[in-house]
Image (cartoon, rainbow, N blue to C red):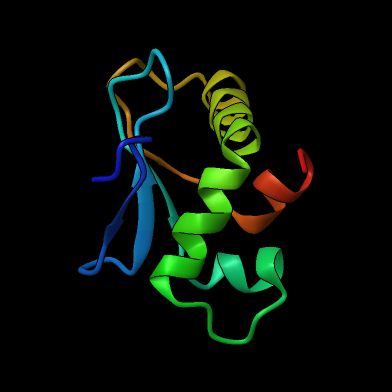
Length: 88
C-alpha cells in the first residue's frame, strides 16, 4: 500500500482504498479507468497515479455512494467511472 492509502490488488485487477472514516474497502476496477484516463489499456501505475492526483474526487465519490446506499461502517463498495467522473 502506498503512503496515501491507495493500493493495487492484482487478484481483482482494481485499485483499492479505505475512504476516510469508513472501515470497509472501496474498489475501482482497472477498466473503469479507461474512461477516466482516456486510455485503452491503463496500467496499474497509471491508475494509482491518477487516483493519487484526484484523491478528493475518489473520496467524495465513495462518501456519496456510502450515504446514498446506506452502507454500514464496515461495508465494502465499488466505484464506477461515472461515480468519480461526476466529481472531477
